[in-house]
Length: 334
Image: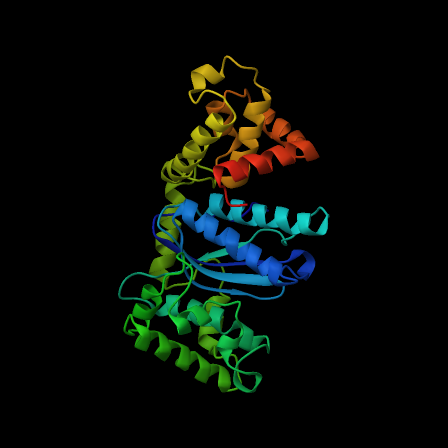
């Protein structure tokens, strides 16, 4: 069966969820949770994403995510890939961390019609109550610190978390009073003893490939028809955003290793030049630029050559030490 098409368009809002491979825990400890949030912050910065709600549970996570540019696919590939690499490295193991593909359901969030946006936000923030971890007799819902609800309560969170749109969806003031009212309302729902999500809302959440009214589904179908001939990669707008960040880092990295910045001069060097491979490894780790862009920008030949050379590079301890040294020199987040 062919994979479902990812619906990407400017300003899209998604309910994103992924589970651990075989239902196993993803977040075994705080190190895993902090690592995921760190990577989430990185991809929000590089892709311009906005998060309106999030929660980390034991074996899965949920995000209410907005993508101003149509770049969900490249961003999620980078987020899950880099987190998985770190997760495995901390355990000296290999293999899948996540179970199959992540789920990304488009959410109708047009101005003046915030119903479905509210449903997803509530569903995410009430997750700890449904799991019996917080809420009601189990303590305050905000006591589950691996959720954005605590950030709403404090009025303080990471730069990628946006409060205003959710508060506006509930017709609440975009200030401390509004945030406290939202938190108090959820605490009351959690204290009722149920999960706080009504049958109608739960049915909407489980409907399938979209969350909205029939006209929203029609809009998504028209997008699919208009893009039927292209694969689900990032479109030119998304690529330009991703490659702009990669170009900036490439110029700085090439200078740091003593190589020329222009592609013409790089083409005079061996395709497998050690400096080129080091820079390619850095860009693969810290940007979402693909092998095709790397091959062209660094004059490394075919895309397969980049994949092979960088893959072999990553297996050597001395090479990884060089990469770490370059990261420190350029003050890259690791």
